[in-house]
Length: 221
Length: 376
Image 1 (cartoon, each protein chain N blue to C red):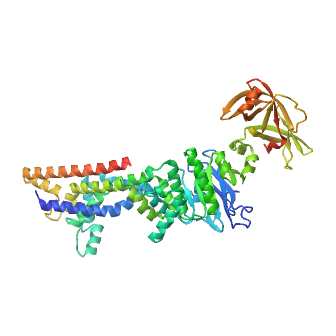
Image 2: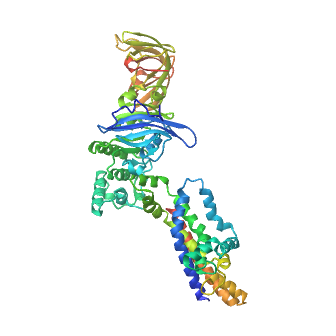
């Protein structure tokens, strides 16, 4: 098995999940509690990766990240010549966008399930919105958060289309485990492909089992 | 008018009182107008009384800052909590009140002590603990300090909610149906505690209920809420004895309400024509229109088999027929036909002594004092 690819997949999944926690959990709070008219539109944008073919998102990102795209230009200026295409950083940004619904949706659902009267009780007791979020909402939504973390981690680990479109197949930089299977099949090395495929299969199964275990905790409470 | 500054309500004397005058629009249509004053000195209990769906909870939640009325004004002493004209609104965090939700709303991930200490902000750990302990002790919760809310009985969790609200030293306590769902013992215990708290902490309290008994036992003042407005507010005994109109009478459980016509005033008695005869009520010097409602509480009706038992002080003696009887614990509720439906409540023993049965003719006596007239 391609251990370098595995390490890269793990690293990508880890930084993506971490980034998702920072962006996705507050976003989930907004989705769960906002009364804004923009909410359905934003929810749709977040959910898009669930239905779009990875090639569509990958194509947009490839164009946007490229030297001609404004994102690519901006990033190039910011980093002094860095590129988002065919680089780990590019994969990172793409994975965050692509895995967003896998974190936001379970977290938002568990937050929306917290009775409003608990937040109201906190407000009357003098807690502001942020304090209420940290002291009441986060602890009560933890099964959803845990499940979202595991889901987005597993999803990033198994991602293929977007990675191939944005990152290509650079060993040690963008060649993740799923791409290494594709490589192995291309070069007719079915043994290696099988080993890697079984490995990913088992790993994903374990991660999903964990996610569902957390979700069950949510229902039981 | 609710929704606009009322010159009568806001003429001076704003210190020492809670001034409420707002209009609330429900999302699904419908309106609630609340307009009343509540004196904070000396501290007492105001009961918001009315049928479910009348808007009592909405009034309470608006006072807590959890609902935002469309227009009007709420002022606590000299502090404006809400002013529609100036677009002022004080969020719940800054009102420094205690609010106990009907469902207690205890935080399920915190134990009893952590729940009680939740609102104690910016205090050193030791002081926070001391204050939480003090509040728990006053509600008899010390033995439960480490318990999870899920393991508490209804009465216990209501007490935790109360201790949590009291720990922050609120200036006003708001309770939504505090006795609902409690067994009689827990109810009595909580009633004692609330009475004691109001007295010892000089804490003005407003609570919502639809149980007349709770209102009578705790309320210094009673506000009748019905059909989207506060119909009447005043000292409890006075409101119960003298509902301001037919609807308030119905809400307050006056058993007999009958249409009548004003005839005359003579010798301090008002004569009113009702179906099947005339009634005499005390003249209270109020101007009455031609058409009135006559209200009689069932407890104020005396039943007798004799037309005359020598000279009797009672002014109203009606002939009636027993229509039906219904046992109510140790009492019996008797529905009579005196030309209009009249309800009497007598003891079970009296019913047996009189040999009451459907169709039996009987004399109904009502003191002039017990007849309350309101404009129709």
